[in-house]
Image 1 (spheres, rainbow, N blue to C red):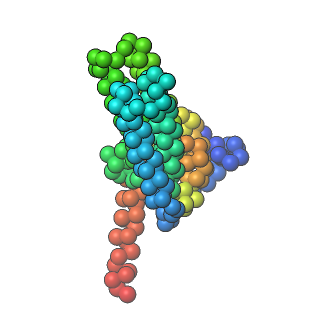
Image 2 (image 1 turned 180 degrees about the horizontal axis):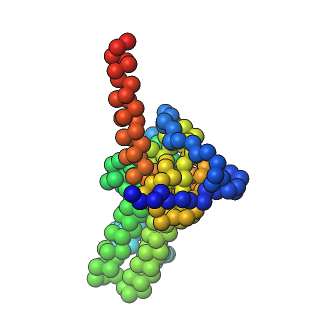
Image 3 (image 1 turned 45 degrees about the horizontal axis):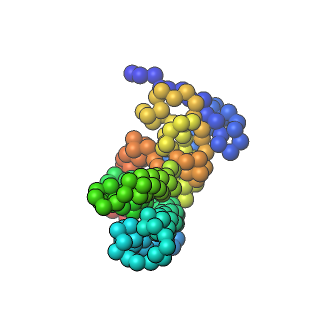
Length: 250
């Protein structure tokens, strides 16, 4: 039988070595926190729609389908529209990320979880890449316009993508644990927190930080280790099964 891994445990709140102190067991999650996530998401979608509209305006200005401010070259007018495009994308993405931290997606659905946390990045690409493609493939556009327009749109796409990316995504399960204020563990460089010190994913780690789930979320560990989550669910199922006869007898 493999020997149990021994970790050095450091308290997140005090920095004290608590290796030899009693460990709390994983606690039952409380109800999920609520907030006006729907309103934030609606605002984000409306701003993203406005961003795409500004991209269309930029394309029309670039190809001189709209006659506006005739003393300026089409490329400069198009860049002006792209600036408004960028502002709408970033503000919309900030609202979307805020909504995700109020009402996050479940990590049990990997596709939705990925999409929910990367939707702003996808919109950032849609808001600028079509402009770049149409500009580069336009035979009537001069070299200066192609170079300048492509460079500006590409920079805007990168800036919007970086601002839209959620570097510390939060899952529904992590939020529930944070609400329950349960004690969890995490490593110095990991992206997830763990409900159990003896989790198999921690076998190669010598030192762990122990704190509340909220402290883990605040430290950028906004999702739960899948091994710990499965173990916790099995424990809860076993507990429910053991209590079932008593309920039936009553």
